[in-house]
Length: 413
Image (cartoon, rainbow, N blue to C red; front, side):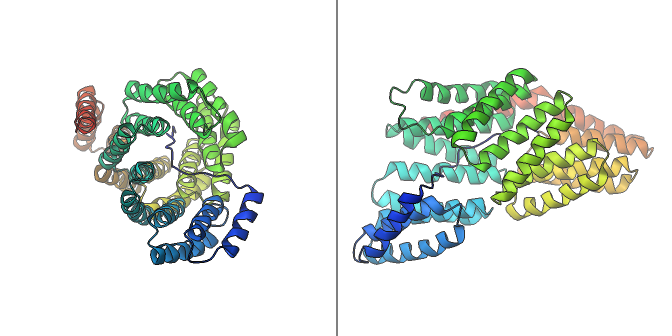
């Protein structure tokens, strides 16, 4: 299963000396000085993943001080950090609320970087919830703010995220264009001292996704390995988990199922270590499919149950659909056809709710086969016709035109 990696605007540096210095400055700075909430926010930004509970307590202090001092920059950065913590915990609605609160503060002080930063992350939240129209809208909004204000590095980040959206819609050539535009920016930077090397790593990983979908597996693997090299040096466990999941997909296609399983388990372990709920969910999807294909029903069922727990908790319809499909396939293998139908119908219901057409063909074909096995020929034929319609390239062309029109209208407004 190919997973596109968005850029979630955040930093992961945890320099112990800087952390100790910030703690001392927080203690010695009077509460009447706006530097105090600034130092608290800086500390939180460095420990938010390693110690989120303490971070939330510190943010309470920062927000109280910033409100007392009418310090908009302090409030904006505090709200933004809180939103990032809620994101990692899978509380996407709460994250969106705090990103919007941060935007209000950054607009007060005319900080386009801060505004675009939060708008771009709102787009990521909607993508996690499979709301593609809102994802596109907010990404284009962030892109426009960045272009209007000459934020070239931020433009490159928006291009990466737009590439992910087009990729997930199945428009690989358009996706490729956005990724290559972003990569060209990083490769052509005269001053590379300020490069966030996570971003080229994300681009390499996403280029691997495109070539995997185009069945160019050797090229895809090389991009994944390039991404892995970068993330082993500067990336976090979230990024590494993503790449190991995708490398697992490559090795499975290549017939090396043992190596594929090792990659999937590595991804699962990394994401569990940091409780990165969406990456845990993705790993559960891949492991459930792997074990279902191996007819190891007990292991497959375990990962389906684990994944559904995470998927429902973070309202991730896209990957939850895959779990229901895996469950349906297992029940079909076991001859429990009516229970299998129920699972495929759950998948179909979520697909309709989220407007996801990518998996519908697979679902319709499975239902057609089941009804054929139940000697319900008419229903089997009806689902086969739906399967054929889902593969209709005219539908994809129309969808592509609509999205392109939306982008054109927004960028010229």
